[in-house]
Length: 505
Ligand code: MN
View 1 (cartoon, helix red, strand yellow):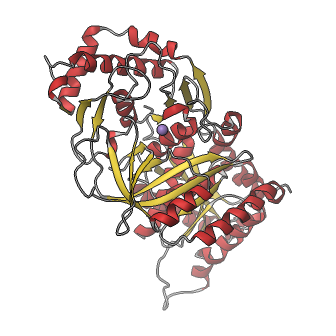
View 2: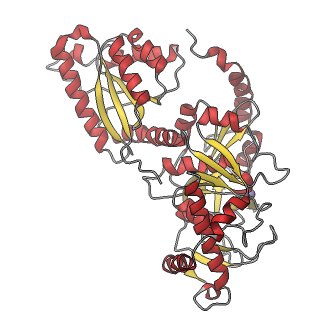
View 3: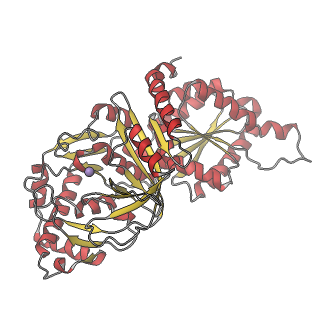
């Protein structure tokens, strides 16, 4: 996948020429120090570069145009060290098409009570410089994140870090290709949607291919490569007896490996970042792709089953957002419930396609029948997911707009082992409680295909929704059903008239 280590955040510092060259030089050198500190923060997964001081309408406009043009700039961080009359920012900000974070900080943490004089106050006046800038952002109805606090505070780094992940995901989804192998599972509603609307809103394209295009790549693989990949499986996973060398079902493992090699070659050929399959369109493939999809997700590809292109794109996006973190992200499905009054739990899984980046232990490589699709038994990785906080997130198409729905959940140990369940699975307790969560999710129209992530939290998703300019409904510890229903009704009217509120001079 693409190298994202060179992506940059640009720190731009607001000031004005009236302070004179000495003060502006001091502003620039302090800004350089702030940028260096943010650049070294482990919470911020991008290079932080001090660009320059914006001191006139012309210089601000040229910085914003440079940011728009730059392939490496994923967003602007603006801080007004001094007063910076904000009419100077109108021209630049109205052109800016990169995500914006307003960092409200101050160079010195502590007030020098004894030494403070008028010069000090004039140089360190973000307290009102940033309020002037904040007014203009509000006046222009700009989507942005406001982060408040001293630049050496690790909590401030975390707030910037969450937004940086969203900005990185946003950058990566621009121009990304989602390929659909086959169409939608017949008659399913929530996996459908407006692909043209999605491309203009999110920047990724969605195009369809016949399964025959994939089959050609699968059939073209060499036996020696198939055997080499089977050896790789032996190193990485615990194989059941039947799949080991000389085992009764070894040929099925080889079929699975051939599908993986073909799928990889197909995705490379189409320059895809995400893909969908559907079990209703598998002509020419021996098995429903299971193991191969699991391993491609592990390598950063987005995936959605049954033609679910919105989820495929979101899996890819969220994998980029969390790629610097240890825990993983996977395609998921709310599958079945434990409705015990003393601890209701959700068992999440899918027919096959769960990403091993969320596995608690070395996955087992198994083969079992699949009662759907009418194909040979598919090989798949089976594992549990370790306890801990996670989120489920989906994008749905409401006809006139997209909505992101996010629910905080806690993964728990299964009450008992699940020796007869032949798929990877996670067991979780949703917040604030099962009944509120499930009802909220359904009032919000959330699909049964969430993206499950142990690496991201609701904050990063809220930052993403803000950058994308879409609605987000968050179901968390403080959610109540009546508030949520009110929010949905209010959002309905807000998003209907939003265009009229937007900056239009
Ligand atoms: Mn499904």
